[in-house]
Length: 243
Image: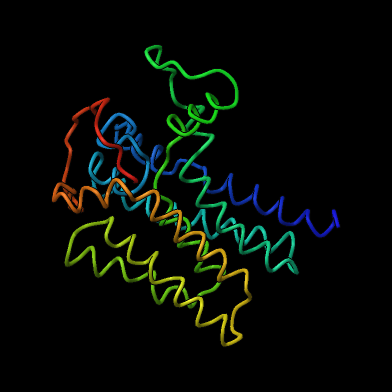
C-alpha cells in the first residue's frame, strides 16, 4: 500500500516545487522591476506584462509553460507506470504557482500586519504573502505534456486575448472548456479517469482564483491585456487580481 501511495506523494512534491518557482519575479527583476510592488502584487504573466512590459511577460509565459511541462516529465521519468500520479502532478503545479513557498520566503514581513496565533495564522500568512499567479500557464504546460490533445482548448485564450483583450476571460474560458474535452476523451477510452478528475479540479480552482476578476468584469473595471501600470505602487486596500 505504501509503495503504491509513494508515487502520488513524490509527484505532488515535484509538481508543487516546480510550480512554485517564481518565474515572473525573476523575469521582472531582469527588467529592474519587483512585480510584487506593482499592480496586483502577483507574479503571474498578466501583472508582469503590466508592470515590466512584453519582454518580461514572454520570458514569464514560456518559463511557466516549461516548469509545468518539466514537472510532468520528471514524474514520468521517476514513476513511468504511475499514470494517475502523473495527472496529479499537474494539479500540484497549479497549487505551487498560486501559493508559492519561494515567494513567501522572498516576502519581507510587514510589521503592520498581525496574524492570529497557531495554524490559522500560518495559513493566512502563507495565503497572503506567498501569492504567485493564477496558474493557468504552468498548468497548461503540464496538461499539454500529460495529454497533448488538451492543446485544442489551450489555444482558446490566445484568440480571446486578441479580440477581447481580457486575460481573465481567456483563462476562465479554457478552464470551462477543458473538462468537457477531457470528458469526451475519457468516455471514449482515450484518457484515464484521473485525467478528467484533475482537469475538473483545475477548472474549479481557476474559477475560484478568478472571482475578483469576474466581479471586475461585471462592474466594467477589469483592465485589458497590455495596459501598463507604469511604476505605480500597489495600494494596500486594492482588490487583489488573480494573476
